[in-house]
Length: 473
Image (cartoon, rainbow, N blue to C red):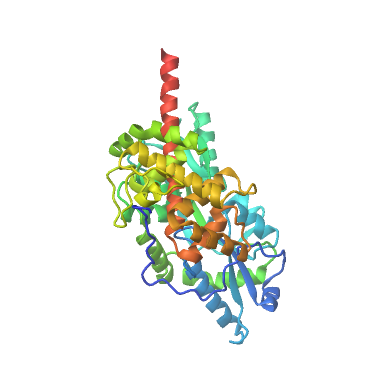
């Protein structure tokens, strides 16, 4: 039913997975060094689930971390001369970024491979390998909505949207100390969900949804080559000379020695390292900007309709507006090859069915009404479970709207089989969805979440403008 689904292209040359099936349950706690891992024939590696770092393409594991670990597993078995019939295996455990290091410290993981910067704070709890990336700087990347910025101090009074678990957060806190000394306003820190990766935030910067981002130089350089609208300011450095490495528990010198022997083969600047970076940062698609002038006009023209029917059927109206943007960019003239119509891209037969009962969806009001009512039908029929919270009930309903309720049932059933929570979308049912039907619905729901964030910013900006006007009147 979606007219504007963004498909994730399989990167050319990507390696087929030779690793164990990923674990979506936290492994039992165990602490030991490489000798114990060899006895267990298992190394458990935590990583971040993202469209570039680690993702599932149907049943196949892919991504920067995955391909590096395929090579590490082969390197490991060659160095240890393990029998071909009894090799050591790598098990990937995808987790939100804020859970990775705690799981490592508690013995649920043996390594973390997630483009982590070595910081004093992290060194208090974990050890790091030799750097895979040296002399990395954290720089400001501006987008079309950025204010004039000549020096770092010009960020005073702006808002930085960052993961609180990232090294960038600490870098902005350090900047704020210098701004305070200069008697300038600090940068406001706005914590975003840990499921949002750097590439997600850069997409929103390029689209004009966010004014700027703070990222590592190598990421900024790659994305600037493929996305129009990003300006990398290498002169605006918040942290310089940083090093990126794999993390491991303290007290694992044998594992550290093995990883350090492998590092030269995967280090940034090596042939393998450069190949991986280009493979996964070249072919990504990015979101449109729901704040752009024409899109914004369409959004504002029907905002009251979304508000009316969102309230009538018990939805956050901005959430269903974000779905309308994903479906058609809120364009009533949109038509899909399958015959879906208008803003909410419903089939006329679906709208005319007795459960919806709105046969004429040729006008924006009827189209939105039918789409929101159908979403309510999906929730009431297939998600009427008190164990599901309101947010996840809506996200799961979006998945059903896109893939069909039958596929939603398959996704949730597969989630249970994978040891995941069938009542949570992000990090749970979305992983099962990638296995059941591929990336389409995962990207669909993810995009709605981004657009919701964008519309929230538009709403907040409008409310702030009204507040300022009231103060000045």
